Image (cartoon, rainbow, N blue to C red; front, side, top):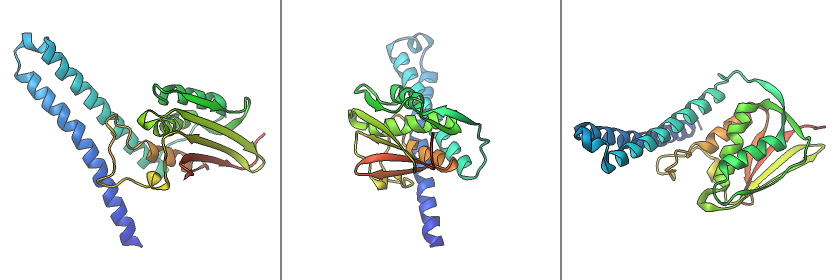
Length: 213
């Protein structure tokens, strides 16, 4: 069992290294070309195109690094949580606006429903879940249900299976936006604050246990 865990961890780190290497190589290639160009050419169409390509690559690299480090810190208990009383409908609507893409989202959440948690972390996690459901241009549907046993949020659109919530390994699908570690971060955020993330019937299911007002 320990060997399996080590193998899974090694595969995940190999995936992260591969994901980081691609945009880093692109950014370095662009900057080397820009450095070899005449000053007048750097301001021309080719120079502008290279600069924009480098900027996109650096943005992707930055997101990957931030997501990886955050998930590691959350797993190690190294993040000081700022727990607040949070309006769930508002958080979900904001996440849908940021992550749903051109197809948009339909959001159903009871007004006044609140959870306890760190606002910045939940904002990041919910955006990642919405973005995962929006892959391939799918329209997202997010629904929140409250019951005595707790609060359940279901986010559907592009199909997500249990395998998508496992740590990716080298050879797992990449994401040109740099969002390939989004579900890893969302799972780590949920676990750090007493919630759970699962995939059922093609949808993402986030559960906060316990009674809610």
